[in-house]
Image (cartoon, rainbow, N blue to C red; front, side, top):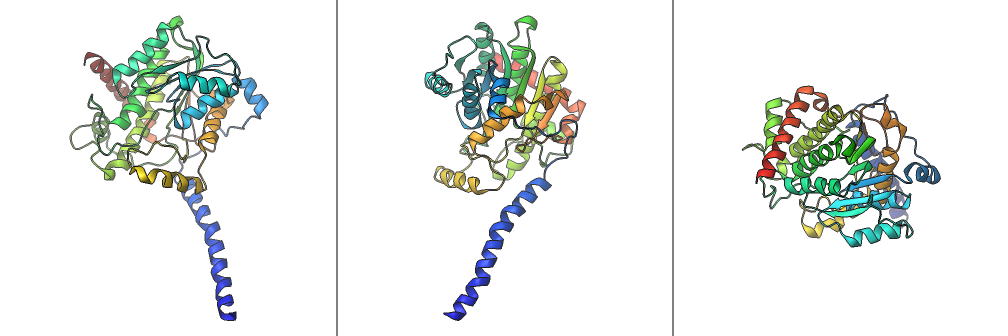
Length: 358
């Protein structure tokens, strides 16, 4: 007994040290992969509940991807804080609006600034029709939040129009919605000084192709430069992130009345990875994610996005990027490349044109 006790003490001590060291090591590794701090953007100081409600109350918000995951919790929290909330997504409907009404304590959300818009954002036409529906309803928005996105679909990675699904939602759909809502002068859906927050920004190092022509090929989905298995996943996700960040840069240059924000959501246990992993593993993966030291719950992630969206920090640049700790960070270097920005914007404009001809 005494020998076993003596053996048990160091083993227990080692286990305790490992329990402390492993999460700490993961946190350090995550920080080591972070891109440099942006001292101009600074760190967002979170508002208390009353101050946040004062900042959000009465705002007219649209959450694209607001039916599930982080977007759903952004929409619910905005409603609780007194905003007029519209949501858009493939499954948006009356049940989601009832949920928003309940979240707002029964407040009236039936005004023109609020509604549910069901469109297939995996198609160019669906994205354009969302814009047209908002314009037809004369909706006015001063806060646009875009969270729509997905991980690679192993069984069917491309849309019926031939686009990679990840790039479609992360880049093409966001471009069409943002650009469409910002156009029209006095009739534009996005109002002067509106804020646009897009949840996808890099802020972390990713393996972006160094050669510009290779990056172009991945964005276009040329033969040999498209998702064909999990070994392509790091490159595809990097291409999506840097293209997203570059698109935001050019959007702010094109639509100078907007303040544009890209955010990294952190590690959040949602269903976004379900197309990539077996269905049986999803609950297990969610549980594992909740144990990670850098993870956020979907509720906390949604509130974090709102804190960033209303912060004065976003006024320091035309485009700012923040991580899940609300630290202003730089984006991937290629996102600041004016040549890539211009090429990408022209490419996305052509994708929109071709999609409407199908």
